[in-house]
Length: 425
RNA sequence: GUGGGCGUAGCUCAGUUGGUUAGAGCGCCAGGUUGUGGUCCUGGAGGUCGGGGGUUCGAGACCCCUCGUUCACCCCA
Image (cartoon, rainbow, N blue to C red):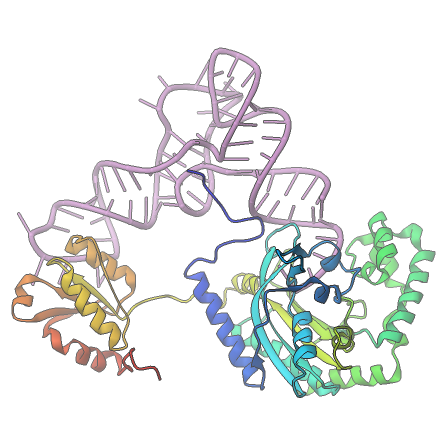
């Protein structure tokens, strides 16, 4: 028999970790739905051209697309992120604005995997379309901040910058290129290569020689239009009003070409690795239009689920939830009664598990212990003859004999009433 | 995509300059306790030493290739 394993950069999320993921998503949904964001589920693949709007020169598009031709000859791609899909959905359906949505799900980028960087990786995020107001920028950032806090993270830094509008940015890039070119000799060969492709990215370099050159580089601030500058100041003021600490970093540029004005990133100080950016986002005021929609401003963020959980691990917060059932049924007759009793308990709204394969009582009790059940229901020949069973409190080891028909009442008294499962609320 | 580290039981890892039947702890199963878990004791199952090729009388150890993973670069969540 051949043996298989997951493809590079993919993995199985096993229990109890998968439960942790669900909990992560539930907390995120609760956080953003409280601010009026509705859930959107775009397709996982679509016309590759949609994603090309992210920027032809970006690595995401140029080398990391999971694209292929389908059987109908359509050139499609697994989504490398969801912002472009959301904007395409907006352009396609033209909902009324402001349109505020949130999402969760896997994205795909063909790159070499390492810890915190996978080919299939999950993100949660929000996008808000149709509003220029700087207060929306603040709302968006504050929701991410609030979410991190709800997870229990304390080592998260908000780094923020403004890239100005398209014209501002172009002028700045020219000035930056000029400066870097005149200082080429002091740059590392890697940085010189980057300079040819995208001068902004040179600012990201962490190499010492480059950092010295960067320190003298022009910053975008002086290139911002009055409008963009005012917008940015109001965002910063709003953050102060909400008491959200931030670090301005005039060299913060982001990898996707569509960003305008406010751009931000969340960095975990608990993560040692290079993959310490656990979330990021910004304004993308031109994107909807390039996807065939009306000229519509937009802003949003995406948080890396995997990386955020790594940060949680590093900080020792938001661990995997303990799973347990209410009741574990031990049947030492032949297992047939466990079938009936377990079923009845489940229908009554409680959770119940049991042992199979007619194992010894000791073995079944061991399973009961492992299941984390509050109570064990023990069915033996002697008690069953008079339609009784033993119910054992696993923590205190106290047990009593009760009528099988009274089991659900007993659970209601001790675990609280539950809605029967067959009735959908 | 480039460069370095690492792949031994389900998990975490030992394994001496290549030398008999490859080990430990945890976990799992069974028994001690023929009606009872969490502690303890005893026993057991489980490994093509990532895969393929080579060197050698002999390879888990050495060489080559390959796959996976990890770190850095690159990039990004």
